[in-house]
Length: 317
Image (cartoon, rainbow, N blue to C red):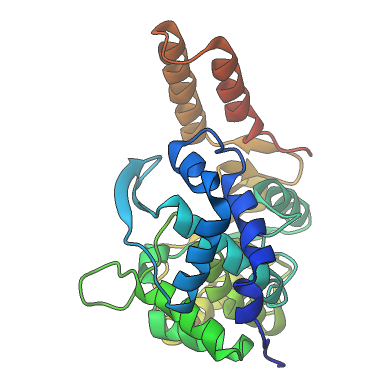
């Protein structure tokens, strides 16, 4: 495999940094931090260039969310988000070349709805499915293994040092070189890339009828339950031995009963929202109504938020 070179200079170029600033501020122009940065944008971009040369990244601010399960979200100042956009402006196409067709997270023209449509097609032509996901995925990603994977596709030493600095800036547990922060743009791409070797093993060696992955949520299709059970053993062994990952309990089932995937129950002839997702939608809509009644949001904002709740769950079949 030919490794990518001459990347760092492209990352720190003024044109790329300005493009990154425009992307990072999209939809956030009224926020105080964005306004402050934008008032003297050229000087601030020059400072970011200097920080990139020094591999200087800010500390994370963390908070917990419970939707639907508890997660720790890590965020950085706006200036650092610009830096992450600058990096991915250059590296996104390099990551893209590593992915198989039916990996749907963090990719242009893909997404959850496209993943659901593909799963529906495979469910209509297959008898059984195997649903898998990784236990505490983001917190379990091994830093050294990720660095080795990056070194196989990137030759530019300055670029690698920059990426390694981002990886080492976070650890899920004290003293353990594991984990990526949920909330970083680079984390999304690193995490998606980390499982790409598994994608190729499944696609090229395991001879299943269909396979779809959205980040660490995976579904495999076959006409033999025994085939899926043997495949599950092989995947679990590969994840443990090669990626230092542990799978959650597998879900086996008949496609006629529906495949639980990305908040839907998908069968060959329909896509339905899971009951637990319906309850979350109901709670979200009631919360929007309460905020509107209390005068905390405008009627327009309430309409926009309500529409977004429905739109994210509707799959064009």
